[in-house]
Length: 196
Image 1 (cartoon, rainbow, N blue to C red):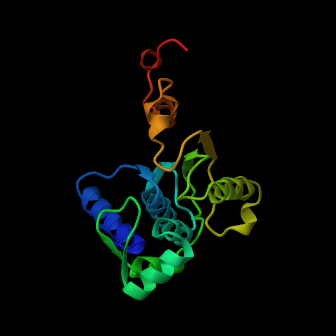
Image 2 (tube, helix red, strand yellow):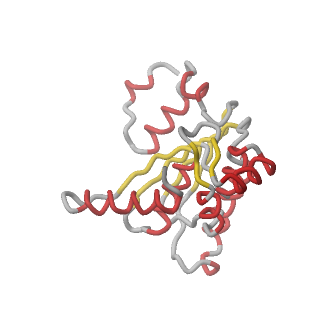
């Protein structure tokens, strides 16, 4: 497995290789830590990313990793043993992942449009952190003098009655998450929605 920094580096290498074939603005979809990785990539490469769709993003990644490890006691055991099985992660995870997350920004600054879907019963990623990130974007749109990065695009959030996996939200008859995803990326046709 890769640390968050290594995941961002792997994404950068993949995109660089793909751009050698075709250059087009990226649209990123990520979930949990993958959503955070996508947001970090978008923050580091603002001209490369057009839009980003984040499912249960793990802002403040150390906090999310601690939750996956089982809280403070789990993190202490993780440090002592050097690796730990994390909830929802295949294989043992090295403690270096937790150390790596310490130096990462809690809320990456994005200049592209962003849409967040968050389960209000999420026990891994922090709803409060996702909401804070949305609010920071709104504040950044008002006071860009506080940021060196330039412009800040709109950030939206859909709250659903679900947990971290968002399984119920994706499997519901209403298909709300799928519809929002398709609308956000301009891929929804009127006949795809059916009667409302």
